[in-house]
Image (tube, rainbow, N blue to C red; front, side, top):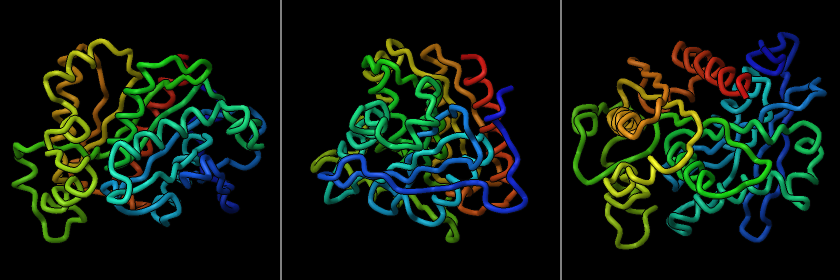
Length: 295
């Protein structure tokens, strides 16, 4: 197993350095880069997209900063957390365009290659696209677009969708039965987020939201998509959307991995040190080992 995968944190202090980089000054797209200290070799790259219903939070929101540090520590990877444009000022597909632009920026001579950390440490043949909630939706759409294009040396080996923010007009059981007053997300909130994020006049059956529409299944079968890990929470209103996504992928001949954390509500990952976060990081470690070591 390569030294850069699944390492323990340095007890003497924070082993992760971070800094911000500009991706597109005009569109105000930037990223926070997390680098394990003391690494001289090329490292796998995690391209991360934060959650927030496409309408809130940034790459410098404390909870996402801490999560990306944890991922960088656990995997020994270079993590690039993208700050994309938000709705309603910038409705979808703006976030998808920004995510894909960030991916291509990594290999551009006037982009990522000019950044000293990325130039020295990024192994662009080992990229993991990852996101939580709305960021999981974004990671899905970026990977779909990437699979349809020739990206040269950029190779997405896997994607991790944490409680992905998918939807539809017809309710699934978790959207009606899991309505805890203490949850960070409700079905009503999801509806409002989609109203603000989707193109004007679009319903929740739009393919940005209902990614499992019948006409999209043929596209899933045609594309050479990377290995996929889907993380679902047993108490999350989005649970059944994640399970449906896994089922559809299997119907299309793919073999996604599923981590169902029965006791996890939405955004369980914002509580560092919890049992669910530890289980997630362990599963992420084994998934990353499988896709990177075999490549």
